[in-house]
Every structure is written in structure tokens, then in C-alpha cells.
Length: 225
Image (cartoon, rainbow, N blue to C red; front, side):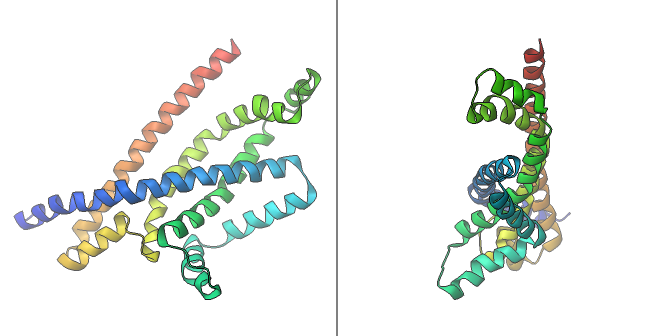
């Protein structure tokens, strides 16, 4: 590897990492937090089995999971202005990523909710709990324990999916890399470099996932005792 290329990679590393810290990670965290809220409400609607609301929730999940996220980004950022609705790139990306991930996570949460034995819910009602107390004290804590691994995987996947936001001019890591490539004509080395940065972030999140799972296992063991 030539000295020039090494200097280029060293100089570009911070130019790529900085948008990662100021744009990619915030975009991921904000979008995923909103997605979790959407997922919980959508899953609870399905779990409660209110016919009209359940159909609306199923329709939302069907559309969000059945269309490509890139197309959704284009519809929101490039399509809605035709209706007079102008949304800046970052909020547009947050809206799309949160709605898209909310649909997938809603199915994860629904499965976790349905894994709770009915007997525990009935026992909660028998000791005088209302619906809200049963949900918050019995159902949701156990559902989150079950859903934690797949939700963590979804978070890691979202970090990588944020690279699609470059298509609507969000200056995250991938777009920063594209701009450097356009100036230096070194696509192979620079795209490998940004891939390694994504890998680093994903590895840190994987470590966090394992740490969280261990803590939850310890907490669950204490409850059983």
C-alpha cells in the first residue's frame, strides 16, 4: 500500500467517523426509540384484539413490511412535496426508519406478548389488578425479556440501513465517503474503510446486546428464587 493511500485513509477516517457520530448514530437512536414506541402500541392493539384497530394495525404492518425502505424514503422526501408537504432530509429519514422498523418490531413484540401464559394474566386479575397493571407488571416485563435479542438485532441492522439515507441527501457516513471518493478516485480503499467503521459500531452494539442478555438472565434467576 502506497504512502499516499495510507495518508488518504488516515485523513479520511475522521472525516467519515465524524458524520457517524453526529448523524448516523443519532439517526439510529432516535428512529429506533420511536420505532419501539410504535411497536409497543401496535403490538398491544393486536394483543387486545379490538377488531377495527387490529385491522388498521395489520394494514400498517402489511404496507411497511411489503415495500422497500428505499422506496419509502423517496415517497416521503421526493413525493410528498408534490402535495405541498416539505420535510427536511433528517426528519424525513427519521419518519421512514421509525415507521418501517416499528412494523417489524411490532411483530416481534406481538409474538413476545403471546408467549406469556394466559394463567399469569388471569392470576393478575384474580388478585385485583386492572388491565393496565396486568400489562405493566406482568405481561410487558416478560415480553421485553423475550423480545430483547431480536430487538437488539434490529437495532444493529438499522445502523447499516441508515446508509440509505444518503439517497435523500442526509450527510451520514456513507455520503461522506461518497464525497471523498468523488474527489480522490479511490473507491475500493475508502468503501472498505467505511465498511470497517460500520463493522466497529455493529460489534460494539453486539457486545452491548450480550451484556444486556446476561443482566436479564441474572435478574430472571433472582426472580425465580
